[in-house]
Amino acid sequence: MTESERGGSGSGGHCICLKCGTKVIHQPGVPCKTTKCPACGATMLREGSAHHQAFLDRQKAKDGR
Image 1 (cartoon, one colour):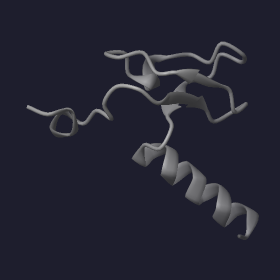
Image 2 (cartoon, rainbow, N blue to C red; image 1 turned 180 degrees about the vertical axis):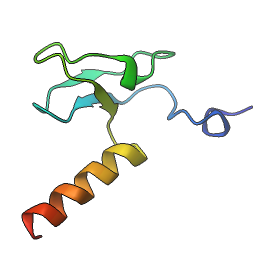
Image 3 (cartoon, one colour; image 1 turned 90 degrees about the horizontal axis):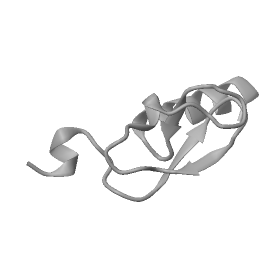
């Protein structure tokens, strides 16, 4: 089974905090959604994931762009 079949984004990349924008290097085998931001304690998302893209789309709509 490949990484994409399991729903993961593979190794590498970053976890990003949607609250304060802090980025940390993604740790293989540890989902970003289980990682707390070291700066503010909020839950992080995988940068470039579908959830991250949905957040960015909502922000654009909210800002009227």
